[in-house]
Image 1 (spheres, helix red, strand yellow):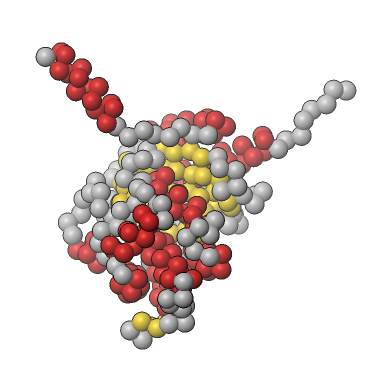
Image 2 (tube, rainbow, N blue to C red; image 1 turned 135 degrees about the vertical axis):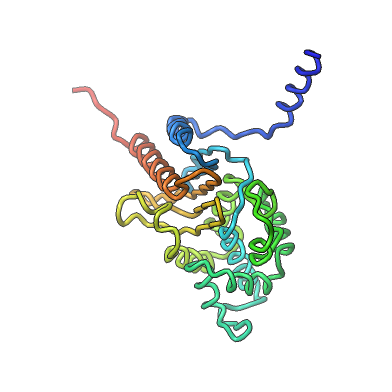
Length: 280
């Protein structure tokens, strides 16, 4: 019996997904985040990446979490990709509504009806999922429209319409680097995300006043998400994804995690670029 127990344990270990280690200079920051999150009742997944240096960290970075409305970033990116390829324009109208208005409603106010109009126009969940995979974005699943997701029975551990924190950050990175959409489309998307009206008590809440943030929130019963970009004082942008399910005080948890990420990356930059001491 003991042999079989050991065998089962070994099998489970080998089957578990590998978790990427933090960049060496960010190990202490990741440890601080681990300690901070260990006191929270929510199940939290975090990933962050300096888009200039490639330094990164994650907590449960390869664990799927429901995307909720953060999927709207991907919907917008696919529509803009189709604009870039001459299939659509931002001056189009759908059901009598200007696309620019639908985009603004979807990204600034998280309007679900506007999102599903654009979702249908780009081809729906299957087309969006296929587009992400074909462009090398793995770890993001798109299965349902927003209306379908909301109508289904809630299961916060359902892997449908989910993303791992690291996969979401990878999507953000590819958007920022204009791998998925052209620079003009990226700038348009980020300008809308900078106006995000929802989640004022999440990623932005505890950051220093005036810190530029382009983000998109997601919310379901028992779930709070926030993903996007934080610009550091030196101009570096940090791509961040924070998912929190279950437990309590999820917005507060996201805000504290975002501030810890900000402070950690700021300290790293300060340490890396401080002037060398010279002998007197």
